[in-house]
Image (tube, rainbow, N blue to C red; front, side, top):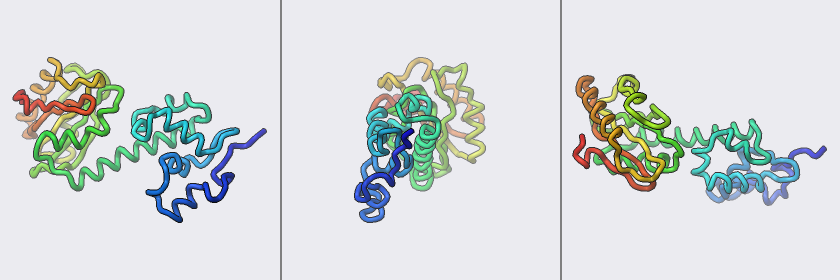
Length: 228
């Protein structure tokens, strides 16, 4: 029975770790970086070839953010352990984005909020509602996904959104969600949800500054459209 091919089985000059230490992490390809995480290939396939297939399947690193472990396990050579490693890597990448945002980003206009979430939200396969929580000077203090799936007023409860905002001691919030169809035009339901959240925010003392809808590589601000 053949054992899985490991990084150490590669010629020394092809090993990602040695290349990283000699030349720096920025000189490694995406496949080589993944190989350092997964370490072990599958029967009859070294780890670099496996990582090439993973990235082809996900259409690059961005695709890792949207594929579930079970989807990744459809690939030959990917079982629970590797699928879990990839899912953990994707989650770390998402959290790192938030950490960077939390420490440096100020929202001065709708484009700032859209830019903050565009890269992540324009590739999602289902609707996700994300809340950006701001302090009194409109600096981001937290971003959090609140709902997933088809959004409507029966499942988007203001209490969940404003509970998170209260916990973060937010002075204001911006709601963002995506349209997987690629068309950011707001639906009647989107508008109804926005007006409901605006009213609740006024009562709670936490202002809803905007509702940003992401579709493909574009966005629509309900504030700019005069709905808020």
